[in-house]
Amino acid sequence: MASANMKDIKRRIKSVESTMQITKAMGLVASSKLRRAREKSDKVKLYFDVLYETIHEIISENRTYESMFNGTSNNVLMIVIAGDRGLAGGYNTNVLKLAQNRYNELSLSKNVIILPIGKKAVEYFEKRNFKIMAKYTNIAESIDIYDAANISDRIVEAFIAGKIDRIELVYTSYVSSLTQEEKCVSVLPIENEGMERKNNLTTYEPSAEEVFRMLIPQYVSGILYGAIVDSYAAELAARRIAMDNASDNAAAMIDELSLIYNRARQNTITQEITEIVGGASTQT
Amino acid sequence: MALFSLKVVTPDKVFFDGETEQVILSTVCGEIGILARHESYVSILPPGPLRIKIGNEFKTAAISQGLVKVSKDKTTIIATSVEWHDEIDIKRAKEAERKAREALSKKLNDLEFKQAEFKLKRAINRISISSKYNNK
Image 1 (cartoon, rainbow over the protein chains, first blue to last red):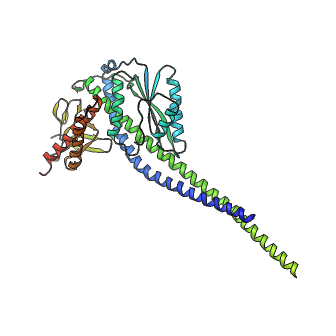
Image 2: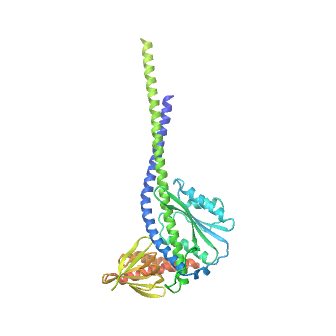
Image 3: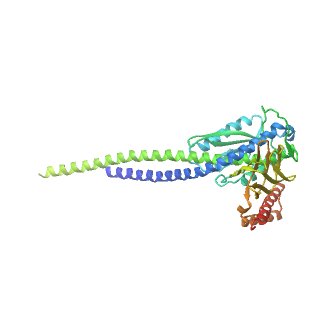
């Protein structure tokens, strides 16, 4: 009986060990990919900061743009970025929860359309029969600015045509290797509340309106690209932590199981000795 | 001549960050040259050349699309991509041109047409800059 029990324990130790190998490998892969993703997102941030600053300067100098977009369609587009894969701790759940909350808020007065990016987001919203504009999967890892531009072109086109009044973006931001933060930001229209109007001494060619109009696609693709890259870095960081924890748990489990195994082994040996001793004493 | 600070950023890298005497670039309204103490100015850049004076010589790069903003203390160019003429992969550019032409020969909706056209412009720009300034 004891030996059958020992076999079971041994099998469990083996299975935990092989799981640990997988979690360890996944953790390593995530951390090496994370480094690259972080470099990418740092560079995008720099680019986007300059873009953001410029576009807000134009807005603060001009009010003309306000009349350009007066959507009355009552449609809001919500872009939701989640991962393509699971096993990343609370990464997918957290961002989808925030998106759902925001959706509940918005849908009270507006008609909300979703644009999910990442397999997990697509699955979530398709399963619940949300209205979906377009969906994108498996793009986060190797995305470049042109991929982002292809997505944002469609959005901007719908916005300029007045089919959408408002665009919001739900994604996860990489804060540090230990923390990620889910965020909901407004993309369009660009908000300028609380901004002071400055003196307009800048020359715009061909005109302020035209510059602003041509800048919008670049602005949106910049935001989108930045958010996708940022989310991907956050996903990898979350996965790395989840996998590290899993490996730690597996190691603890192996320790515990080995203890039980050794105890069982000692028991069988003790029992065998008692049996031998018992057998020998009856013979003499 | 007086120097001014110039910064050229793309999503992938800071392409140029330093002082220069003059920058020449083509905006949607035509070619302009920027010197130190230029007035405040903003314009949009289509695919075209970007020439930066480094030392006594101009170095040319291909810009894919972007924005130029001149303010009192600095000039900033934001572009989706910029490459020095000697960095351009001519094979890839020719391949992109072929693909864009192929796409344009099909029936496309407005948006697809615009995207393909833009792609073609970018490819042609890179090819022309590469062939004009390389091998010299």
